[in-house]
Amino acid sequence: MAVRIRLKKMGRKHRPFFRLCAMDSRSPRDGRVIEELGTYDPMVPETDARAILKGERIDYWLSVGAKPTPKVGVLIRKYGTDGSHLAQQTEAIERLGGRRAASIDAAKAAAASAPKPKMEPDPEEEAEETVAEETVAEETPAAETPVAEAPVVEAPVAEAPVAEAPVAEAPAAEEEPAKEEKSESSE
Image 1 (cartoon, rainbow, N blue to C red):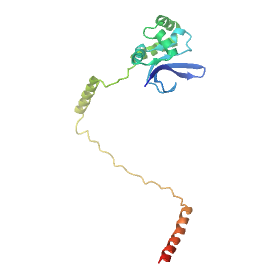
Image 2 (cartoon, rainbow, N blue to C red):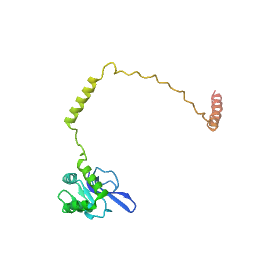
Image 3 (cartoon, rainbow, N blue to C red):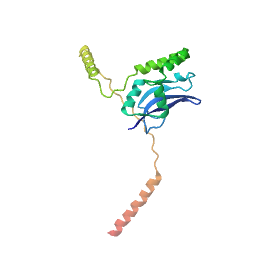
Image 4 (cartoon, rainbow, N blue to C red):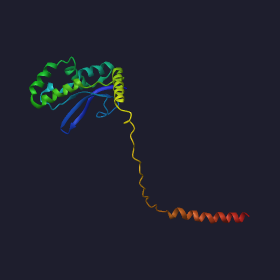
């Protein structure tokens, strides 16, 4: 599967908003996403505050062989892990102030704390789950374990009247005398 890092269009008419996503190259522009890697809002007045990227995850996808589109390549060079405009981006976010800066900071915090997709289960977590299950089983008394269920009462189902097809019966009635005539003539 060829993975592309590209923009997925969101938003509404005359109010575009894009998500930077890792996608299968065969999927449509707004199709299924493997992982979301950031956002790009062209409506933000400060040019350098428009792109918020998850630098570590982008670096991972690039190391695995994902190819960015030309526009995404520019955004990665400017605002990626070692971007050329990181200082300007920080200043632009501070200049925005108010609600927009708070939402951008919240997006950055969410991007930093977002769980990374797991490829294989962690043996430490499995051990913790089995210990938790054993403690729950020990705390539950044996007398309380069986639960009596109420008997299931089935209600009679009303059947809908079926309309008979007189056309289907008429040919069958005609065929029966014909068979009788053949059997009499052969004797």
